Image (tube, rainbow, N blue to C red; front, side, top):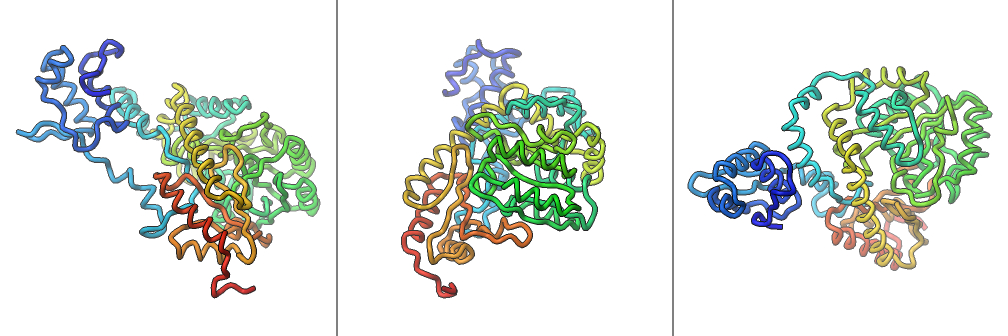
Length: 462
């Protein structure tokens, strides 16, 4: 679509705002790229059949939105992209490194949506209220949106049982803080999301890793640890586990929940990847564990990491405790970001963004499969990363170091080991972080070459 193809008949509201919204959309989706010179007020007015004053108001509106610059004698130009768009690349560990070590979602439709939503909020006189202090558990409308988002996965929860957090990492910290005291023991899978480690350290807890197999956590291992007593909580990721990609079968979920109830162990279920799962519906562990169940999720992987919107579903009697932990750590989750999240959940934008991430992730898995054909790895449908078993004589730490020397960053299994659990000779390879899919392919080509020619590095002990 070009400027001359703007159809004002399908847009509501004043004509100047309809023109401004149409131009905002074209700037957001790249149709009008940075540096593009916009038509003169008179030329656009003639093309659209409106007055020059209407176009002047439209240009003033998109200038107020920060999307164009006006230069006397030269006209109006689309502004260059902000440096904020380069933040994901700024997180790369070093210049020239292809970073496959961070589990970021593949690029989707979130940036285009943000420009429109911010413009809408700017026109909404009530938006200023989100700059004020809000209840520590979150506004009722935001908690209701959280319940709706979780309900998309088939679990209907009461909004009053939800506490908003500043993302899933913050959710982990607040739930652990509300449940434990320094010195308490908690359990997790032998390999687990590495973000649990700093939370454990900060709170002065002791962690023990439990045996896993290809289906995830083994119930007998959980029961043996629980029988020893003095276990406060089990942290786990039963769906599309990070890093192994396993998903806990329904039968095991019931067994683990029963053990938790029998021994009074809280279950902290991290379901951040749940919306990506494709398969028969699975019951959340927290739904099975009753008063022992805590469910955590966020929009970081499914919609956008920068929203920092997370949700905790807590037992009714524990909601105030979680809210108190939020208040102690940051007073409240950012209400302005929560409002953006709420609007996106309510109007279907979040679903569309999620689908765009799913499509992008699927394409990346297909390309990864072609490059790594013959390698021993797991990357089930929905996974944003793959779990790569290394052939002899590779050890994970040596392989990671070798790939780093070749300009590719990946994560060794040891990074995810909990307590004194042994780590396999495996690595996690994330597919979403390089914004250009060609960069991902280059990194995977280098990995495939190393796998196909496993010459032991000079520092490898064999």
